[in-house]
Every structure is written in C-alpha cells, then in structure tokens.
Image (cartoon, rainbow, N blue to C red):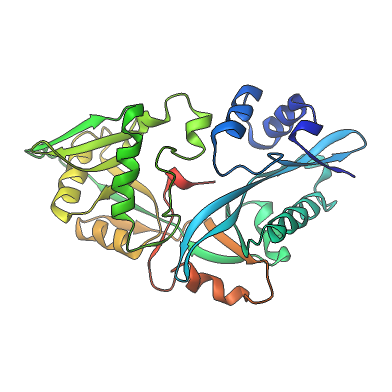
Length: 315
C-alpha cells in the first residue's frame, strides 16, 4: 500500500517534502504537538504517498466544524497538499485526495473543502476531482495622504495567551450572522498556535473607556497590513481602523482577506478601494449523492454575501 500515515514514515522525509514544495518546513516536535492538542487533526495525522521507498506527496485531512445554512456540521478540511515537482502528473495527489474523501465518508462527513489559488497547478487538479468554487477573496486598500491622529478614548492592547478565550468569545458574538468558518474552539487559535511560538502576538484587544469591545489581527512588523477587524459596533470599527491608519508608515493601509459582503461594505464606507477578486479561492466537493456541487455555495452562504473565512481559521 503506497499510502501511509505519519507513524509509518520518517518525519525527516516529511521535512524534505515540505521544504521542497513550500520553501519551509516544520520541526517534528511541532507536528507531534499539533497531533496532541489540535482538535481538528484526524488519527494518523497526514496521508503520505510513498513511491519506491521515497515519500513524494502528502495531504493533511482535518475535521472542521462549520456553520451551514442547514446548521452546524463537521466538514473535511484539506490542508498541506503538495508533491515533489519531479512526480507531478503521475496521479499521486489524486489518489491521496480520493483516499481522504473515503475516510471522510466512513465518518459520515458530507463535504470536503479547501483553500487554494488559481495561480497554482493544484487548482486544476481540484477542479478535475469535482471541487467547485465557493467564494472569492478580496482586499481593501486606502491611500493615507495625511496620517490621522489616533482616536480618543480607544486603546489597543497586545493580547496574551490567557486572552484566547476572550478573543474567541468576541469572534463568536461577531460571527453569528455569518456562515462558513465561524465555529471556533474556545481555547485554540487554529494551526498558527502550533506553527508559531507566539501566534497570539498577532492580536490586539480593543478597549473603549475600559470596556473590551473587540479585537484586531495584524501582521507583526507590517504596520500597513491588517487581517481581521472583529468589532460589532460601527463606531468602534471606524475608530479601530483609524488607530491602525495612524500607525502606517508607507502612506497606505491594507486589509485582507475579505469574503463577507458586510465587511466589504464597512471598508467602502470608510473610503477604501476594494481590490479583487484575488487568485485565492475557497472550494468544496460533495461526498454524498444527496448533495449536488451547485448546492454548496448556497449552503456556505456565498450568494447571500454571508460567507466568512478569516486568517485565524485558514487551513
């Protein structure tokens, strides 16, 4: 059997595969930690294709709770898909994907989903397997001609590990009107909590008059780039955007990715240009005959403008 699980391969071979494919690799200790603490990980961790004793391809299957228009259910998340360039075209990824789809079916999972880019080879592979586009991703950008003064009465605080449940609680309240990746584990900030020692450093809690009103997610060291604005009240959102604009060094402010119509409308209201759709795509495939591919965008709230996928939930 050419398809193996994590404990049936040499972790250093995984290291070499991901280094060749992505340009980076994760230490074995981090992978084992993810297996211990990440509630999304399946038994056996990844699935690996071995050809003539050499590990040449991988797929990482995840169990991911999502909110569909039909209710909350577990969807199969496909992550970490890669193969060595010298074996492209031999069908290894197709066989791994079909194997993972069957694992999902055995668990009663009806849908598999992934995120990718139209600019890479994998996009065509997924289409041939039957994956359909769910939602496009957009960016928001604004030229800052004169750096604004920071808003009065608003304070940003660097988040700490003990703040994770508060961040997740704020997100849960904010995400109630949306569908997609809105169901987060209250103590876990996705895969980044595994890959980065201080993933929580990306978050800034927002206070107004001593009251916690929301949070931001930034890219450390990139003052011009923000990734999540989770604030229920528009005045707090507007003030938080202004606080970020007051810190930008390069004369513009950027936000990405954006999928929900409400987010796009909020940034347009503040004078941002919406750029996109970008090459990034969310895709999904039905795994049971009772679902049709054309049903999936509606189930994820895409035509309704209520599909939500933020970087904290990326996979």
